[in-house]
Length: 562
Image (cartoon, rainbow, N blue to C red; front, top):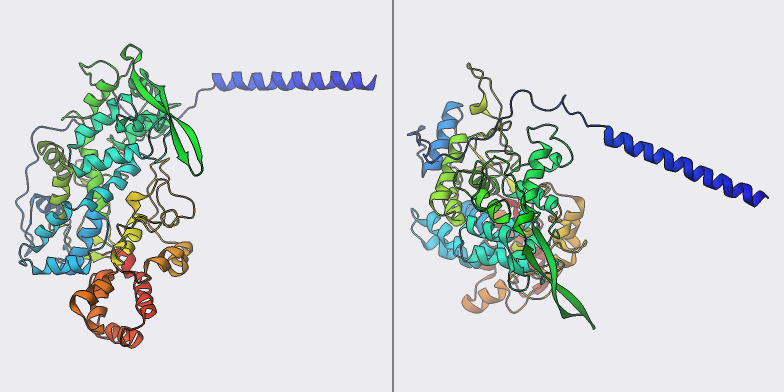
């Protein structure tokens, strides 16, 4: 009898719980989230399409500071308007280091600097930029940049390992037009082992909502994720607009194509290869600006609409990301929050650069060269750069005085994870090593939890959150005591010290000077040279040279882009 009572009691409790959960779900479905208190007032506003006419370049001269190219005209005009004095030019050593880290992701070697200083002083910096943009390390460095934005992962189910990385790297190495390879990513079809671009879609298993968030944020600079379940709480984007953008992907389906055997350790396991199929009749996309494509409402139409010349976002977002990467701040900040509610600090320059980008066939290297050869980029750096504060104008329209940077100084920036690691490898002659001391481009992403790159804040390739710009205790300990630095500084047959001694039979003092140039991109002071020579002595002990490299790596100066 007691067992029977317990059974009835259990059934009764279960039934009551079911009723409570059912009612809660019903109430949740009936409840509509109300963001009327935080959404912007008035009629929705959109960014204006990119004009075919360029903004007029200001004819400006500010004291003795003359522009190097059109970028400086816009920047100096704004600086003069704000009555701020721009910084002086940095010296040749700082420029060599800054441009090398920004364009190819590693510090210049002493051999590179020897070539650099042999060039005519007036042409030196422009020749240096051209030299860097021709190096294979340019593609290595920027593959990681675009890999972060496209959330590239080495292992994607249904695609060969590293497929998307190969696609990005090849596109950069061949300097293919940016709009062209973006179109290929969005419209990729066929077997994954025949088309590396398919890995971009397979990475999210063809999920329309995830791909919508990814594409709008990385390529259009729009934070549309908050409009997935309801209207955006702080912008004009609506849930209907999100669903319209998601509709472009609904005709795409990844299907198993074949299976190939892959060896993992001592085992051979089957790995599926997928193919992407497109069924246009299922797609029902509506573009966020309301523009319509003759190519239908599927992925081809989406690629066409995104990369159109007059699209309000595509070209502007691309040049804003490049400017932010080299200058430490974009015209629009955050860089993925393009909106009429978040105007640029320099709207005319942003549009001028976007049109320059379009008119030069979406050439990424052309924009990078233009920025790096500007006077604005070549200014001295400052530890703290003041921000431009929004000011109210007499007409009540303060869009022309949006907050942001004035770019009267270059900010002192900390190297990212790959720049620190790869610079250590370049300085110690190990950049092309194939063992565990290998360059970032040769590593699978995301790296393991204890990897050097992970410790220094590499992207997890899941979200598009900005990387940390401050150091940590763990990073300091890794540089001081970690296996990576300890192994990298060991003298080996291809080490620069061995090469210099073999080629030129340099004295200890000359080797010290060369090491300072190799690691810090400058010559030592008199006191630094005396200290180093007193430690290495006659230079016969390898451990002394290894300790000197360790000391240079652990300076704050080594870890910053000045």
